Length: 148
Image (tube, rainbow, N blue to C red):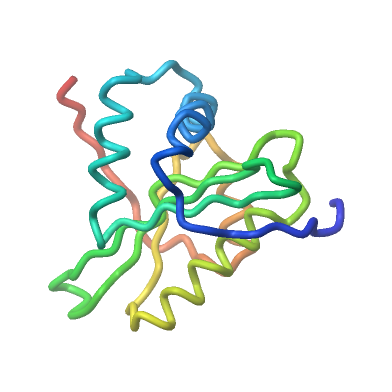
């Protein structure tokens, strides 16, 4: 593993849409509907319960993370859920993902979240290992019923 590279983390803006779109197409290994993506991205930027953060290194976006915050009855409090986390392939193993998770953990503490959760596709074994390294534990299963 390479040493951590210095990054700056900031809220995503509408100007980041094209880069984040490319990140998520790569993450999902498919071409997402660009028009729908852009509309959802802009809508979510205005939602105070959704946090989009980007990491920059030398003026270039190298990573993205999204966290949705919601009040859940069964937790009797606010819970954050990481929806997407992407690091450019050439920047992986430089602890950028760890820095993004640490940023979310600080936000979670500051905002009084009960916990931070993440779900990932079971085929992404490296991703599961990454989250376990950052302190997440496997405690639930997610079941999905597609409608499209």
